[in-house]
Every structure is written in C-alpha cells, then in structure tokens.
Amino acid sequence: MSELRKIREVKNLTQEELAQKSGLSVRTIQRIEAGMQPKGYTLKTLAKSLGVPEKDLCLPEIILEQEIKVEEVPEVKTEDKSLNFALIKIINLSSLPLAWFPVANFIPPLLIMIFMKEKSRITKQIISLQIFLAIISPVIFMIVVLLKLGSPSVMVTMVLLVLVNIYIILRNAYEIDKKNSLYYKLNFNFL
Image 1 (tube, one colour):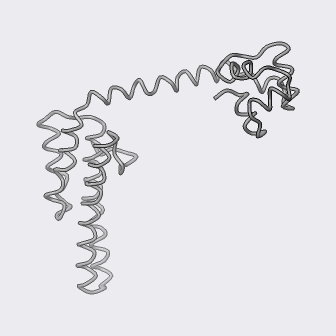
Image 2 (cartoon, rainbow, N blue to C red; image 1 turned 90 degrees about the vertical axis):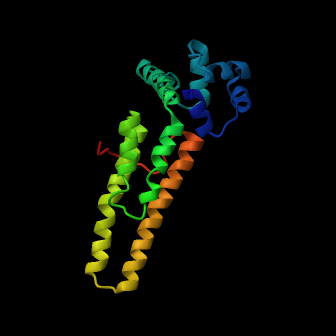
C-alpha cells in the first residue's frame, strides 16, 4: 500500500475528495497510489493538502526493498505445491487408530514418514504434535489420579484426552484438505 493511500485513509478522504482539495486530478492520485513517486509541484501540493511533511509521502528505498522481499515469499511457498498432500493427510490420519493410547499414537505416522520418505516440514510438524500429546496426556492423567478426585473424574479425563486428540487429528486433516496447511501446530519440532 502506498504512503499516500495510507495517509489519505487515515484522514478519511476519498481519492475524489483529495483531488478536489489539492487541485490535482483523480488520475494523478491513482497513479501515485499505484506506485508512482510524487515529485516537485505534485509532492508539495499533496503534502500541503494533507498537512504532512513531504518526506512522509515518499517511500525510502529500504522500505521498497523490504516490500520486494515480502513479495518473493509466496514464490517460496509454491514449493509446497509439489508436496504430496494426499500422503500428508494419510500420515496425519494414521494417528487415529491409536488415539485411545496417546503414548503410541505418533508411531504410525512416524513409520509412514520414514518408509515413504515424506520428510516435509508439515509432516514433521504432525509427528511433533503427536509426540507432544504423547508426553502431555500421561502427565495430565497422572495429575488427576494424584489429586484423588475419584474414579469418575479419572474416566472423564481419559475420555476427554482421547476426544481432544481425535479432534486435533481431524481438524488438521480438514485444514490439509482445504488449505494445505495445519490448523494446530507447534512453534518447534521434535524431529
């Protein structure tokens, strides 16, 4: 977004209103907002009309370079399109049969990843999430047991842990199917 457009929107002005206020054409304002750098009379007139210093309407070269780098990021993500998302979805869903036994639910996806040689970032994130659940579920279960809240609370905790794991697996499968990404992921990897 151009600096002029940002300032214009902050001032609650339309392009037409700014054109009328500055005496410039709407087309000139559109060109500047599209990326043309204002110079000379145009720059001074816009700065005066908006009540801002002239330098605020110009983009420094450093910012332009940063914007160019930001535009290059989606090109890196196009490599994700070469991934086999059907296999990644299968790897994710392979945790379901052992969802009732959280300590081992990361083993099927890990084996599939190794044998199918699908070692993408998403696959590692799926397995890391299951390893994390394999660590945290027994801890939560033991806390409930040690609190001696009674056998009904222990049973409810077990069922809830399994249901949460199933929900995470299914929600990630849906997200892989729709957006080729994960809904639940960690900020770190165990692999």
